[in-house]
Length: 340
Image (cartoon, rainbow, N blue to C red; front, side, top):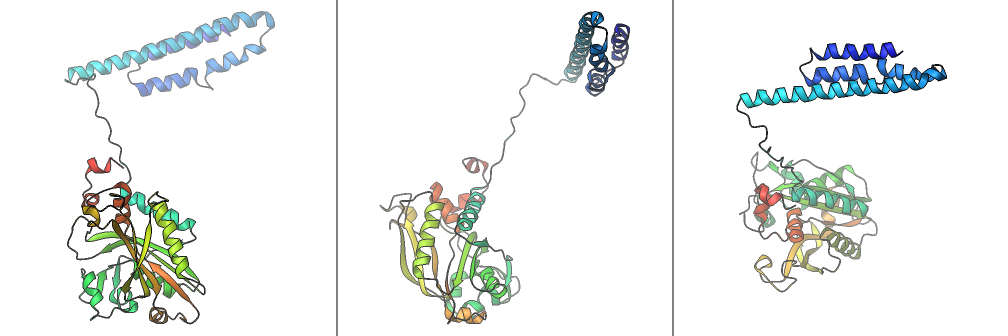
């Protein structure tokens, strides 16, 4: 056995002379020190020798194993030094610090999008999706906004095909599909991007994200609407003490219609430029789905009623992180994004 162990060492010395790369050296290491190598198999078989031979065989075996490990390590250093000299001859300074990798992070809008989905799933909503490109019928007509309706003025938009095909101006266009494809009771949330030909300013952009909620059943109430939005909005803003107020408004597709506001986080309700000195920030429009809208989709308005709401995701990002200008979220400036 000792002869075989010594032969392994001699064979290694001969093979190392022709090794020039770390890849070749790794193959040699596996061959001589791997779990199935001749050396390891021999060392494992020492226990089968007569008792009087085991101690000496074990001592020499371990010594030869250490010698092999030392030779392989020495060869590894030689290869590294040889490669370093090659780089130096090429004028490459291997001691120069490398460039630190810049790790990306999720965009704050994406982070809030995911939070919205998580919060409303916990509140029992099913996530529903719809196409960005829709027809006029889904986006306006079935929601009580015919072509001559003044409400369309606030949603002046980009038409792909005149008066017929357009990028959706609100996620209510997907809500329309939900009422066609699903049977009541319905409890869905539709997050997604919307497009409007708006003047871009600190609080408005021409592309933005909404999350549309729709709840239809036999016993839906204003109390349910207020409780759902209060709980959801406080969770999204990480502030259980923030005041949420509901005031009357008008939308063609809801009756009664409600505007939902929250205390301005930037000034704690004292009044600042971001909230136009009012102390309040508008979060969304909401209300009970108009009976005519339900009937347009073949839903019995005598049996079912429900509410809808459509906040903008960027508005929550701005409030949560105290971002004074919504345009900062669209610039993709790494200096801004690194803060999130």
